[in-house]
Length: 262
Image 1 (cartoon, rainbow, N blue to C red):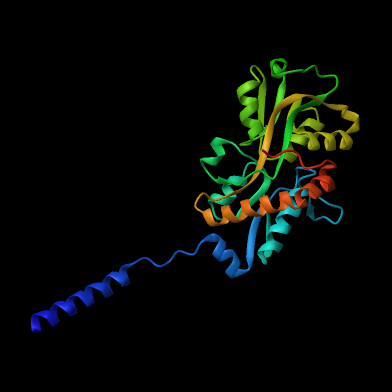
Image 2: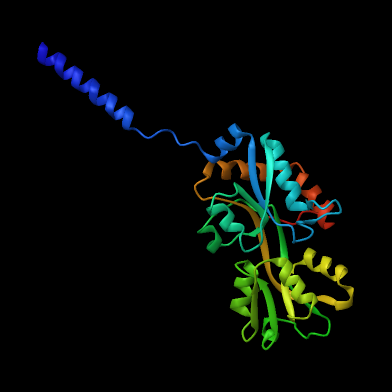
């Protein structure tokens, strides 16, 4: 009987040790956002009309409205972190942001580093240059200076297909645009909405869209481990695609209906 009681005591002690040694429940990013009532979303301020500095000196655009709507629907405060095209992904992997909403193109290389939501917008990327610059395809870029933002899909595509071009990489979109405006580069690649905006901002450059470079489907980026947050974001995109909210945002900022996302 004593031996039986001793065995029970030993099992109880072992069970207590096992419970004590068990890892504590790891709070998910979504749980933390909801409990802290705050979300940090990285955005850009130099890709109009998706993001730009408005008349009141605050960042605005399609991406910005989406960031505000996500925070509102989560019932939390929004902290916006302004980033460049080159440091969008680093903002996630260094835990400076919970989400990145900054026209992040969906591709396999990027998906190996961060999780990407279903697309919330799509747009063709076009080569932009002066009307005096002869370019009808990537084959015509040989010997020309093409500027891109480092680490973007433009960087990848132009590097692969603009054979013979002098590809110059810059840290942000604003510097690429400034280089185009000051004739330091012959051309660059942006979405059609950005191209239209640049033509209006710099009429003396006589900019025009030379050819379609590739098409982009943009998603919302987050850390690969944040599966609960990814599910919530995908649900948000699905819901607001079906109820027409995303379509209204496209009309508001791009002047067009929401393009096909699938």
